[in-house]
View (tube, rainbow, N blue to C red):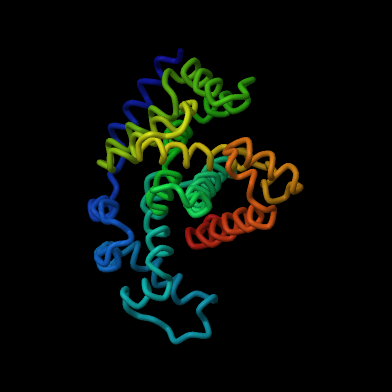
Length: 292
């Protein structure tokens, strides 16, 4: 175990910048409630960085045929509350973890893909009671511990990724051996530092736990959704890897059905539409963040 690295990681967590308090308050508001739009506008209005980016996106080439908007409320309305809140959340986290090279950008790409996939999975599974926007946040932050690892121990993180493990349990064991603790544990500590809702923190902590039958609580259901999204999008975690949408229908079905057997019953067109939505939204957000 690398005790020196573990000490540095724990120090990094103590020094981790906090997320905007207004954003934490926004996460506590039900995204389906009538108050959500006004709460989102308030968050953007008091953060110049958010305001400038939201206005830029609302007045981007995509909206060129429409009249320019000059108010935050109009900009959020044009983008849509969901799109604006996704961008605000991503902007908040990129302030803390600024990606510089292809490896770090691949971590961000994977985080976004899992976030979007988690939300879309909720829509594909009508029996679930999970809020799709909560699934998005949990998916976006599920690997935040890997960002901390990259900042303090990039060589160790690469050694972990290049190890001989082939299961989530193997990954966690490799991390504990090389780093002294796992990215799931680090991520949960980061969520605690940011004072995020308990369910998000516990989902980040347990997203690699093995499934034990059908979920019995809302937290277990949220963990299942994020776990499945992570497994389905796993290839994107490594630079230069193929996207799942570039694979054959047989590979797509096998990968998704292995992650969640219920998906095996969906027609190929629906599975392809799921992957297309993930790819489209990921590209839009990465462009908005200036990461492509």
